Length: 154
Image 1: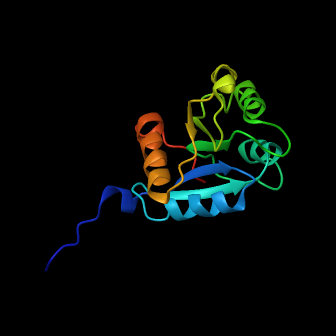
Image 2: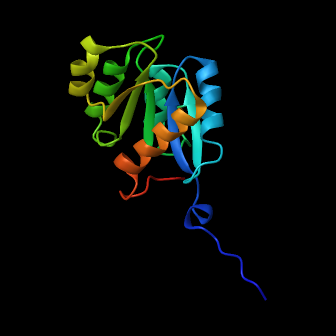
């Protein structure tokens, strides 16, 4: 009887990722980009820094939220910007080691130092193509997260 070979990523639960962006179009593209990747990602999204912190701290309405393996964070949000979100993440001992990829459609040369000092793991321009976004996120996963202790996926 033939056996079916199962790839390791197919047998693992999806890797939770938090996307923080107030642009619905970009959120749709992220979901599409990560739909069929290896590893499999479970994309969770919020549209403000306040919601991001509530999700990460598992406060209502996100009390049952999984701990994301990493955060994809837009530079500009409606309530406060990425450096402030990063400072608040860094101040929480449970979250301080969370890898965060900051993205923006605009050049931010004058803000790179502030982002790095606030704790950004990596800073990128938002890719304009789905494949480029997929490649960027999978590369970030492989370089910054894969091989570390898995996040609490429950």
